[in-house]
Length: 249
Length: 206
Image (tube, rainbow over all chains, first blue to last red; front, side, top):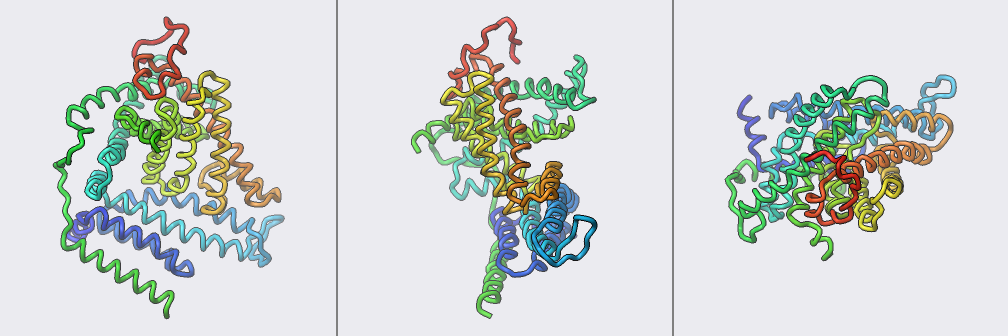
C-alpha cells in the first residue's frame, strides 16, 4: 500500500498537473456522459492510493455535490421540452431537462474532481518551486505560497479576537442584525493588524535580497525522476489514442 | 503597461497575500456568524483602494485560485473578482472612495460589473445553479414562468448588489481607520490622508 502512494505523491508537480489536465480535457473530447462520470471515480481511486481519500471526498461533497443537485433540480423542472416523465400540479420533469443536466453535470464533476485531486496530491510549496524553475518570477510564487501560509495563522488570530470581543460584550449569537453587528468588530482589528505587518515583512525579505536581480538558490530540492517520464509517455499515448479513436475511426 | 509594472512595488506585492487571506478568513467569519451573504472580496477591495487597480485585480484572481482548492466551482468566477478589483481601484484613483456616499456609488458600479460578468458564467457553465441558498430565488423566478437568463439576472441583482455594497462599505471603514503613517507608504494611500478629523477618537495601533 505504501509504495504506489509514495509513487503518486513523489511525482513532479507539472507531471501531476498534466495528468489532471488530461482528466479535465478528455471528457470534452469524448461524446456522451458515461466516461465523464468515470473521472470522479478514477480520481477517488487515485486519492485512495495516495491516502488522501478523506480530504478528497470532503471537498467533492462540499463543493461539487450541492451545485450538481441544484442543476438537476433547476434543469429537469424548467428546461424547455415536451417529453414529460413525471408531473405534479404545475411542476413536471422533462426528458430533455434530464438529458441536459446529465451532460452538464458530468463535465462539471469531471473537471471539478480532477482539480480537487490535483490540489490534494500536490504541495503548494512544490508547485511554486516548479513554477520558479519554469522561469516564473519568484515574486509571483511568493504571493501564492505566502497567501496559503498566512491563512491558518490569520484564522487563529480571528478566533482570538472574537473571544476578546465576546469578553468585552460583543454578542455573536442571536438574531441576524446582532450577528451582522458582530462582523465589523471581529474583522477590523484582524485586518488592521495583519496589514500593518507588511512593513516588517518588507524589511525581512529585503535583508534576504528578495528584490536583488541575481539568480536565486533554493533549499527546496525538486527533481524529475524516471517515473515522471514514464507517466508522461503514458499520458501522451492515452491522449493520442483517444484522439485517433474519436476522429479517425 | 508601464503603469501596470509601476504599481507592483515590494510593499504592494506584500499586500496581495494578506488581501487574499483576509478574503478567505472573512468568508469563513460570515459562515461562523451564519450571515446569508458572501462578503469574500473585502480584502480585494482594501488592496485595490490603497494599492491600485492592477494589484487589486491580482488579489482577486489569486483569492479565487485559493478558494478553488476547496471548491473548484469558484475558479469559474475568477474574472468577476478580478473585475471587482479593477473597478474599485479605478474609482478610488478618481476619488470615488473618499466619503461614504461616493463609496456606496462605487459599490453600485462594482455590483453592476459583477452582475454582467457573473450572469453568463452561471447560466452557461452551471446551467443557472450556484449551489448556495440564493438558488431558491432562481427557482422561484423560474417557477413563476421567467426564462433562465432573466431569472439568474434578477437573482444576481438581489444578491450581488447587497453583497458588493456592504463589502465596500466595510472596506472603506477599515481603510479610514488605517494610520496616516501607514497609508503614506502605500501607492494610493495619499487619497485617504487627513480623513480622520477627530484624531482623539482613534485607537492607537488599531
